[in-house]
Length: 365
Image (cartoon, rainbow, N blue to C red; front, side, top):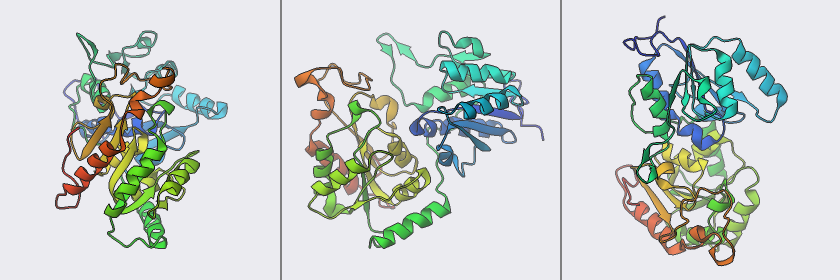
């Protein structure tokens, strides 16, 4: 069946389309508005998404995706199999939403008629359509919510966007597994859950763990506290739980689907800027996020029941460094200057402003 016409645009007649978005889980979720726009414009086309190993479950049940193709960047065999697959062709269009040297080469390898990516020196050669990754104003790059960058590529191909909402679907099997765990913990159906993830993907954007423990201690009267953790983070979550006097639970080992199922049951998420925060946002769960080196204008939704807490008056704020380079008293000031009281106040403001489904409609940053 021929895809719906785009009135002579670059994607007119496209039957098979590949979107490259391997790397981090949060980045993949932030791509879903672009996937929704593509599916809306090409309802009959096959849309495959290339993701890193273990992230395909984030797209499970997504109505805008035909298939998630996983590959392991650390495995030579996995890479070789992928490159052979791409070289065989078959895609009419490729959107490279990573646009690093490797992904640019993979895009060119497909020999697709339409190859879109970001206009970055040393990589633009791979694309037939290239757009700037960032919008630049008189003072430099203009922060904007991350999905907009992917939507810029989509718009350049003649496809209108369909909003900034993130998409994730919770599989019934994962939902049942989480309900069984909640039952085993003696948590009654409908009880409010307060989730906290004290870990962070960068050392520089990780708030002090003992402060997370004190925050959740203060909020324990509002609901059942659950400590979240991922690979290599269990010890940190257990240490935070041990600091609390009030009872709390340590989440069981979970994949992305189980995490989504648990967050779907939550009344609040508290943590650092991270991939699981974007899962909570996609599910409409109110969030309180401590920001420091990363910019909330880029990594925080512009609307919804979500609060940002960050330091003020620091010239180094939003430096985007993985590790804080400043010495002694200035080291990690963007994290250390955020007080427990501000995070508690933001959380209580969200928990106290409920709408008909028990979740807060909005919160100011």
